[in-house]
Image (cartoon, rainbow, N blue to C red; front, side, top):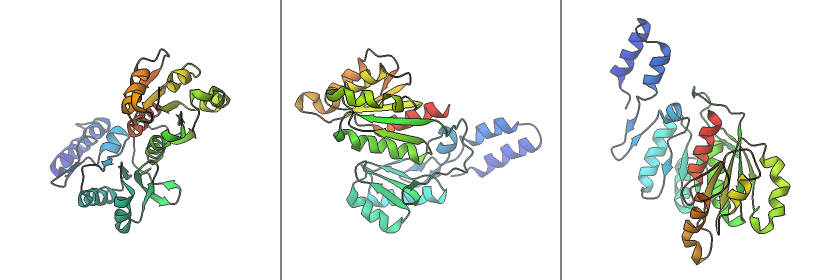
Length: 261
């Protein structure tokens, strides 16, 4: 909940010139949350981190998701609900008409109209540079579900995204044809399953940082993503950072923060 006395105290000190506006801003940006008994919603996260509070659907009841969504919408925050199955989304949609859904990415998001993701642009977010963009590259078509989670997350915070799908090392000429366009991005998210070689190859061809995302796509010896994870962690190319298996969301957050500095 908003701590009224704390806010009033900070503003009073500013008015008496005992506290600078900059220091007051730094204190206020860490102040506010809302208690729902089963959750404490961080309404200031967009202000503090340049990233919104996000609802991770697994493990939450539909009623809990509804209450959190309603509370976030009251504060005009962007809505992202990750790993949400379509059946539960259809039930949410009846109450929240502004929600859109990506079946491939299993992610729901707030939108003002079809094809346009809603973002609280009026929030004075520090260190935000919206002119910087992210490229998302996948090794195979089966990796697109993770790529879509990353794409929608980035667009929800106002980031420009370009996608380059199915450019795996089994047909390296496909990747080489797209290098000039991929190089235009400020950060690259590279998503691959199987042996996970694509991030190393790509990082050796571009000058931009590469965020590698291993996926659980592959046969038995890929061990549900462990094999590509180890390949990416052992990359000999410079400038590769690796996130968890199937974690398109975390890759998007990392890419956005890099672009925002």
